[in-house]
Length: 422
Length: 79
Image 1: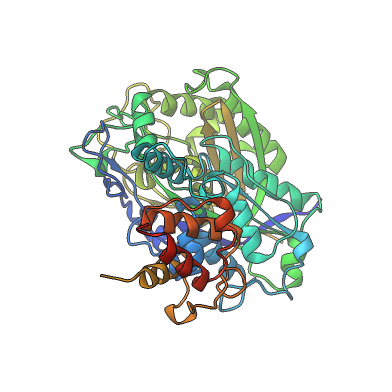
Image 2: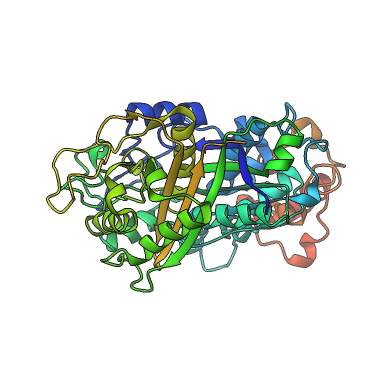
């Protein structure tokens, strides 16, 4: 079995459009939330979100492609370009180096929770405004389908190995990374691009999540609306963006003299088998995912320094996850640091696991734990012994970090990253 | 007011992301301007929208170059 290492990362978020900007946002506890600019939200219960700002896709993506593609696939190509450059697998124009990558031994597994909902909405509106003649844009279907991130990345870099999407709502990117890592671990590929992207700050998404009472409605103060573990939390804040990874077998990375950023140590998936949207109250599925991931990684609970939680800032979800952590880690739950970076980035749905995995890798690289911002009032149902890293980043050695993500449908994913040691 | 030819060229420049100088009468959407079959369908639909006409599929199949589009539209619009 091959060891799986990370040689490139990319980030596009509401608090930074690149890895260095994202790192700075995480360190400084910056909120990415603000009034929605992508559509007129005046009639909606929630009128704010964590939008990516000042973003010009054409700085990293071909102009013609930028015109043809949905926002979520452009985000995939954009963040992947950053990761591929960091990994040293492309030339100055961002084209793959044939000397570094055997196309038959490289692939892309890319997640999106919803895909090109925006493109579908636009086309339905155009149809509804017309005279009934169906004139759907020929690119509607390829823009809409949730596998097209993987498709476009594979085409961009001529990767002919495994290529597909994983869909498990807000756990999607966690499962994509696990699948990509397995392809390397089992020797089916040398290089895999993975991650996730989501760009659905749209009427249907905001309206739909509003109807589920899933979103914060703190319209008078968007910047503090995402407040995981706070007594007054009232739902998640929708985010958008992408996180990208270049994974390689250790052998392949070392043979080409690549800089190794961290190791993907283990991962596990499980199901609550309980409810379409509510978490299992005992956190049984989440506990099992964390325990199995630790077993896979050969890591003990005492060795985990940091847990980046799913922590969406919903009343039920936040406490169920902490309960699961206490069950999985026992007394060790009080030694490690816990934080929800969704307090800053918002909830990126199918891309959440990707951007939070980048946060874990940055925590290992820079020995710090990003904060859970917007803490004002303790929740009496949360054990005060848990170190939830409120409001300010904490400097501490981070050798092992675990990222949890959970999706509607009861899907759980836990992934463990470790400082690379030869 | 912009002529039919000018409007057609503008649509092609917008949709295919090509330089206006490349959009000559002889230029083929697929062979010269980098379009694929889906781009061609999109162009036809844009022409329909711009000029408020309906182009039957069998006619659309014969519109492969900039010049063919202009000729067809000049003979169909306002008739």
